[in-house]
Length: 231
Image 1: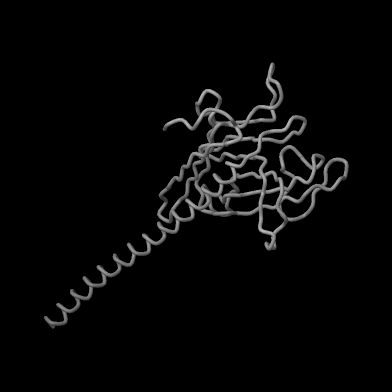
Image 2: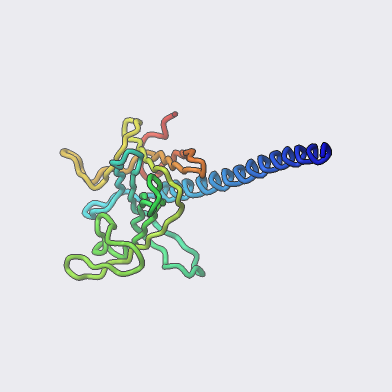
């Protein structure tokens, strides 16, 4: 009986040690996957934003950054960029496109979102819609006159997103929360210019409820403004 009792105590102790080790291993792997996904997606956004094209006079498209109105940051950004794809790719051909990043609420999961990327190819000036918000999916939309518009392709890049924030460097080197190159201010010749740099912050939630942020700052070479300020 004494030997059985001692064996039971040893087995319970060993089980506790192994279970804690297994939990720590699984948690470390989940954290590593989360960090890898966060870095990949935020760098993808940074790479595309870096190539944003300056606005063109007479075309109501440009760089638009809109702050969210939620309790958590739910910002959105839209910009004109050239999409390049390999000739052998089975995807839709590349070209000049209107790209946007925003958050889409996840069904049955409060306070969590999916990172949504939307892309609309701009085949000619008549196809520019100003907002690119003609719908989602692969169907072709039409404008008010019935002319066909390029399809808007929507993709969820990652879920478990707790927030998305963009900040923009203005002509004075200060960060501001919004940007709109389609607005021509009094006394201004032509459209507003691109921001000098963009700070992107993607917030991801882990399985334990913790939130981790990923924050690169990317310069926009075509802005011709001041360099990225120090943080």
